[in-house]
Each structure stands twice: as structure tokens, then as C-alpha cells.
Length: 412
Image 1 (cartoon, rainbow, N blue to C red):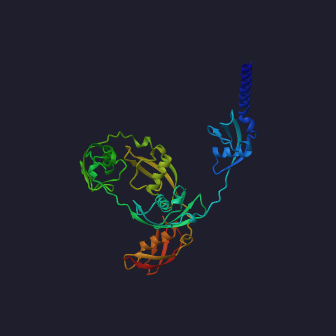
Image 2: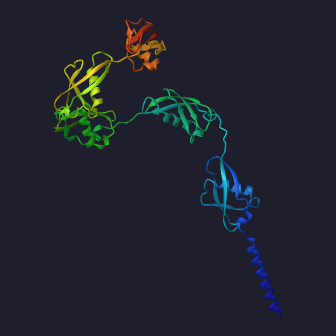
């Protein structure tokens, strides 16, 4: 009948429509045919999801306008892709090449070179404080890595950055930070320190300070000083970190130490050859040799009893009982001295400021060491009296003498 034909026609139509829809939804792997994406250029060594998707679309033009997503986190060489427009997922591979960035001059970004006043808790500003001020004055550098080249002076510093080329000099002034100090008594609350154990009947300043810090944990890392000399039961304490002074009380208990014979520890009594710059060995050189030969005595207090002979000495120690005789031979030290002029290279010392009308020997020596850093720890002497502009210098560590010149300026 006619109605039956209509039903048959509708059945066939729905089946064809359904099959057409199934065919329309393809698998992603049929369309994403190029799975090896090649080299992806990224500004970081780790590629982003967006950069991977961009490369997929470049290599597979049929996906140019499709919605693609990266499943999970990509590795350094692989990623998994899916799409709402297709079924299934596809693994793609790639290599990462870091984008070469053309750096600009630091001076084009660090425009404010006069940093103004830097507030510091010390009179000498730190590198971190300078960098902080640079970033405050130059907002484009806020998240950049900056470094101070060498040591800053009191008013200048040189800056560089891995993100830019070149270096820039900046200037500033330093203002000490005003710190509002509290009373020491508000922090040092336990003033009765109790019993202090000491190896002597009189307690030392260090032992008192140690006990104060044990009883008052807030003072553990603070600088404390004992005012004057402590008595047997009392001491007065002050600190650069606080105002005022505090009196503390204590009792002293002598430490009981069971001492052993020195001879049981000082086993090597024949010390061998001692090299000395003089033919007569000093007490310090003998003690040094004893400690080298007897490592258990390395950190002990040793004393030579009386005067040593050319080959013998008697040793004692507060840490042990008894005395021990040691023997040795003396070998003169061969010292090859160089000319003072080879080290004292800067002979024109420039201007010396002195509070006196005439510059002193000590001021001349100080200026010599400032201008000649290799002589910083050397013993220098001025020969005779210096004139207003010249002085002659010698040293036990070098041969010969050197004449230096300077100008004198009276300190205001």
C-alpha cells in the first residue's frame, strides 16, 4: 500500500543519513599524515604546546583551521595530539632549536644612571642594594638578571647583564639607615644566670656571654660585650644592637679536670732538625716542631720551661702534669731576599692627608701599602726622618732601600 511505501522510503533515508554521518567523522591519523614535524624554533629549550600545534598545522594543511589540543605535557621530542573534529589521538615527534636573540645595548634600557640616595644599614652600600635601586629607577629591568662588575666604590658601580650587551656606570649616594633600638633589658630577661663552670676560679667574659645566650635565646646571634671587669658574682652587659646596660649575676664552679702525664702524649721527644732564620732556635719554633711530631698536641697549650739550649728544651702544659725534655738540631734557614724596588713599584704616593703639620712615618707607610698591595702585610720602616715631600723606605723582608715622594695636605 501507499503507507507501506512511505515507511520503507523513510527507513532507507534514515539509514543513508546515519552512514553518511559516520563516514564524516574521520580518525585524526587519516588527516594528520606528517607526524615527524622536524625542527621547532623556540626562545626556550623546552617547546610550548602552542608552538607544537603551529608546526603540526604548517606540516598538515588540512588541519589549518581545525581545533587541536596537546594531551598532557609534551616531552623534549614528543607530544600527543587530539581534536574535537576527529576521533583518536596521534603521537608526533620533533626537535627543538633555541631561537637566537639579538641582544641590545644595556645603556638603551638602563636610562636612569643617577640612582639618587640609597639607604643602607652600613656606610658602604651592598651590591644587592645597588641592583634593587637600579630596578626601581628603570622599570624595564625589573625582571632582568643584573650583576655588579667588581667592587662598587662609595658613589659608583659598573653594571652588566646576560640579557644585554655592554656595561653601564651608575652613580649614587649612601644614607645610613636609622634603626630604632630597643632597651637591652626588654630582651635580656633572665638576669640570674645560675652556675657557670670554669676551669679557673675567676670566670672569663666569654663564659659569661655564653651563659647569657644560653639563658636568653633571643640574644643567641647578637653581639654582646661585658662592660669593664666582672666580679666573682656580677657583670654588666651591653650590646651595639640595643640601648642601655644590664647587670647579671652568677656563681662560679671550678671545672674538675683529671690531668694525665705529658710524657704519655708527647711520645716523640727527638724532634730532629729545626730550620730557623737564626742560629738559636726560638721557643715558638720548638713548640711548632713538637706539635708536628706529636699530632695529639696540635691544639694544646705548650710552654718551654726556662731558656732552651742549642739542642735541648724542657716542655710543660697547663693541660697535663709533669714536664718532658726534648732534643733537636738547628739548621739556619736560607732566605733569598729580592730587591725592595721590584715590589714597591708605585713610588709617587700622591697626596697624604695628616692632622699634624708634618706627615708621620706611619702615615707614609700606610700610603705606601695602599699604593702597593703586595706590601700590605710586610714590615716596612722609614729610614731617618722624612722631608716634607720625600722619604726613604726599607724592609727586613727585602734588600736595599727605596725613595718615595708625596705631597702633604693638612686634614681640615
